[in-house]
Length: 335
Image (tube, rainbow, N blue to C red; front, side, top):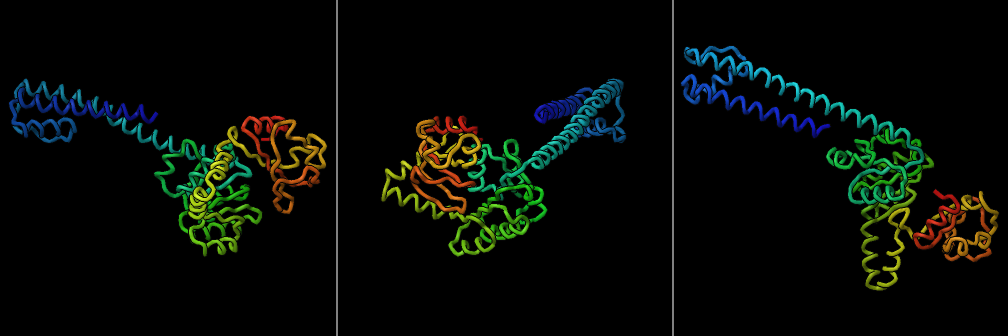
């Protein structure tokens, strides 16, 4: 719609230029005015300001002026209507977008709030989008919002503002990711979010080692240092390149290309009777292998024994090729 109005505006401008050119040439050669006088007469005629002629005109000049007035009235009227319609329509489209986005955010539940849409925030959003996890981004740069608003839900504002967090639905959210470039800003976000919702799982970015402890004290559940992770990864490629390359192959890109899956025991127990990992028999049924077990208290067990007793609210980490993971999800109706 906006593109259509823009093309009409270009047409209106072209017609206005044509009228001015027609007027100047007419007064120059029909009424025998100088170029300056011809331009002056064209402007006061088209704009209908009511000034008198530069000098008396003959019948030819008067007839030309009548033609110019009638022509310019229609063209100027057309141009004004197009510009007005464009401005009103643009405001209406922006208002409609904001209402639609607000409605979509209000319908979110157990979603993720991403604070900041810089390099890390963008990567987090891409991963969440690949896994079809509902999320909303808080960003104060209007240009960034306008660039990505067709694909991502945005709240324009400062993540340190409690009202902005409320607009993002923090009371219904399950996770918050603070990816602001400044550690102090992330600290304030974590403090505010923890005060507003006690059981919110908060993940924060940190640039300095000294900031980690402060962020944990403020209420962050996890603190990530992207620079440290990047350096460790590059050094590991020197020390054990094949192992790191293999681990990179396990990296998860999306729900249909992942090699790893985290599954709650309830997803199995609701459909089959399973007291141990052996009862699940995932290797035979799906081709997937259980490589990890997470107990209800958060304890991680790598390569658990087949006879390990399964507890309610625990999870298993499953390894497999994408097609095997897909088969697992379809067999047990895992979303």
